[in-house]
Every structure is written in structure tokens, then in C-alpha cells.
Length: 361
Image (cartoon, rainbow, N blue to C red; front, side, top):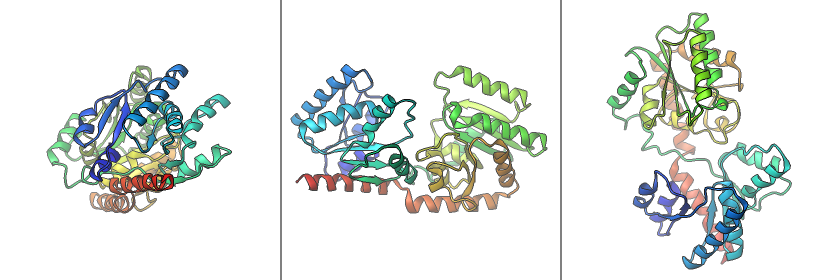
């Protein structure tokens, strides 16, 4: 969405091929156009059919370059771009776990482009370690944060107050937020275990902890979390409010933000967005959070899956007063503003496009 809007501002015509979704209106308003194609399938025959659909689209709409961001559509886009003789770009967004050689080959499409954009230095190192071949152009362009949207001064206080009330937080409570869909690798169980340790140590008075995220049908895992909360006697401390749409207000409503992912986050949007909102962050010491969190300055890094270390980090931040927490958060916002803005991401991405188009003549 951000790159499409930036392309439109620079006079290009951005077309987004997708099955569609909730953001179609926003795409059109920003100057883009939806090309509705059945790209939401991994069936081999569909990948081939989509390749020919994309090839014909490239030819009829005079498309100069194709950029893919997901593996199944990337295979179709790769074949289409090769047939139409236009440059092909991918953005490597994640780990893409490979449990067998076939899956590794399937994932490899994201590294087979004329230019591969890695969304962090960690992702770039991961690409180099996973494949025998090295992309011709491997470029690191971190995900960009919209500092106008994620601006603590730009969010009306009543929006944050409404969320705090919905979460059951009192005016003087310290709110600890762990945002993210309810899935095991996001580390909710580690967080609950850390809170249970702090409760045993008598360190949780005046604390409200929030697991904000959609279960996306994982009712068994959500039930497991609620049981763990009850078994630890944390029912009056931990809330699971479900999906939260107003994330700027959610960060503003919190005092400390936690990203406890047990698997590496390729970039780690939570750490970056929370820092942009001037909130101190506790994140696991792997993946992109190593680049967005400044240990001891804007937050703390802990070993993944280590509830004792998380409990210690929480205790350290809970011992600070509001002024010290805000000072740490403001250093985080300055770090994000210097290196991880949406404007920089879009400009660097379009620079890659221009490089490939110049090479193509």
C-alpha cells in the first residue's frame, strides 16, 4: 500500500494483482488499481494459469516491472516476467521455514529475482545462509513506519483512555502490552510464565497485562492461554481482549511493550511501532529486533523463550518511574525516525526499480 501510493505520487501507474480484501478502497484512494486475480492458491495448475494471466496483463497494460511479496504469487510472477522480458523483484519478508527439500525449493522463488529486497540485515544474512546461489542484487530495505500515524502527540488521549478502560486498567495501573495474533511462536505462554514469577515475588501490584491479538480460529491455543492464566492466579491481572484495530492508541495506552516471539521476527513490526510511539520495548534477542531496539537505551533484549529473563526485564522496567520510561521511549522514537521511516522505505524501493529499468534500457 505504501509503495503503491509513493509510485502514484511519482507519476507511475501502480497495479496490485490480488484476490482483493479489506484495503481495496484505500488502494484506489492512494492512486493504485486492483487487478483481481485468483492469486490466493498454491495449486500447481493455478500457478501456471496465473502466470499466463500475468503475462497477458504485462503485455496489454505495458507493465515495466513486476514486484512479488508472497511465494505462491511469486512463482506465477517469475514465469510471467520471464516470458514478457521485464525485470522481476521480490521482497523477502520472513523466515519461510523449510522442513524438506521440496519446501526449500518452493521458498527459493523469493531469492530468484533480478533484485531481492530483504526487510532487515538479519533477513539478508538468512538468505545468504539458505541458498547456494546469491541473488544478483540483494538489497536491505527495512520496513518503514509511518511516523505521522504512530505519533504519541497525534493520538487523542481519549482513544487511549477508552482502550485502558476496556482492558480493565485503572488510572494508576502500569499497563504491559504484548500485541500479536494468538499463536504459540509469538510467545504469549512465555509472557504468562514471566508474570506468574513476578506474582510469586510480589512484584505485580498495580499492573495490568494485555495480550492483544486475534486467535484467527486457534481456539484451542486461546483456551490454553486462559487456563495458564487461571492456574497462575492471574485472572485479575491479564486480559485477552481480542483483535485491536487502533494500534497507535493501544501503544499509547500502554507503559511497556513486549515482543516475546520465540522464532525470529524477520523485521519485527511491534518493536518498531512501539518505539515510534515512545514506548520502551522488551524484545527477544534475535531477528530484526536487534536492529530496531537499542539495548539499555530504548529497551531491553532477552533470550528467546526464557521466561525468567523476561521476568527480570519486566522487573527492571517496572522499577523505573514514568519520567524514566518516557525518556527511554523517546530515544526509541528518535532511532526509528532516523532509520525506519515509510518515506525512506518507499524511496529506496523505487530506487531499486529505477536501477533495474535503467539496466533494461
